[in-house]
Image (cartoon, rainbow, N blue to C red; front, side, top):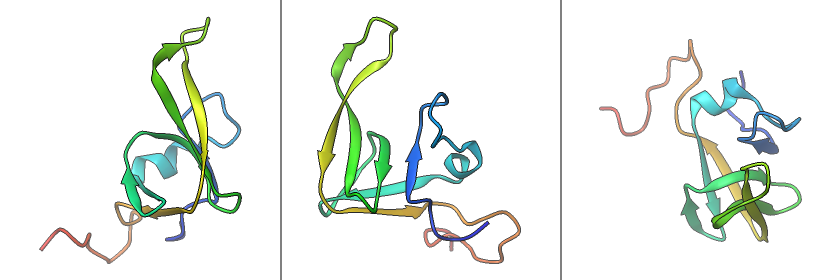
Length: 91
């Protein structure tokens, strides 16, 4: 597995952009220079993220999301399995 996160990723299992292996490694997202932990979906090349719009839900119980545009950066929080590298915070 490469050390570059995918261009487009979603946390919704029904999405075609869902990838459990990638999500288990942990993905960090920086949007407009600020680290975000509430991102449900992102696309780096198009420059947008989707986040939940408060506590509101649709009629199927899924959170309503809003699309925010801006500069998106993504990185893996944990190294790939079999990788010799140690995480930056582990010393």
